[in-house]
Image (cartoon, rainbow, N blue to C red; front, top):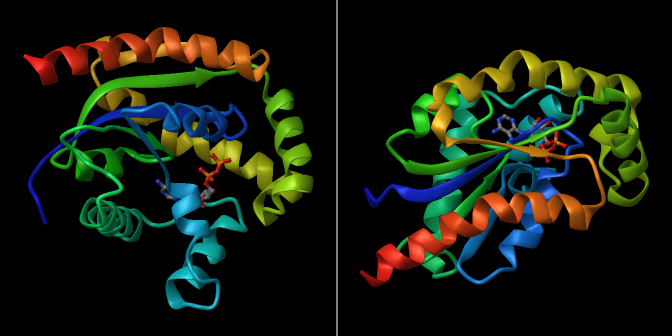
Length: 206
Ligand code: ADP
């Protein structure tokens, strides 16, 4: 495994705040590479041991254990580097969904260089529950369909994921309002991320 630390922007926020939507849009902009650990897990064969392990937790609204998650993420990144899809010397990595616990953040310190943490925040839980339940109809995700599972995910976010913000220095954290139309939220996200890319380009050319 290479010992390059991937230059990364972390997308951080409760389920339903639009991390995945915004991350995927940004991932289309040249120079960025979007990686969602939810998508990574959902890409596992459901009949495989790993796929079954994932479903065991996600269908209950729980997080997959840290060791398993970080190991799978590392393997996945290595495959993307080997295939040439992700080039750490060019791309800024947008991490959507990881690290999601303080322990994961510690385990990943030697693997990523965090340039910014984009904290998509929404003070209205009911709006997020609503978005997720609506999304279930189109996404077919079992963890979105049941209201009690959605509420559990919000609780887990508050108890296990929110404390990850304290792992990073406050200067790295950008608060972004997640309420508004997708284009409005995108504009909020870009106002934080565009300067990071400009700086990255300037350094790469220097
Ligand atoms: P959302 O942000 O809407 O909850 P995701 O697609 O990011 O959805 O994740 C779906 C599920 O995948 C999570 O509920 C969890 O079970 C699992 N998962 C994703 N990322 C991680 C992670 N970093 N650590 C542990 N579990 C994860």
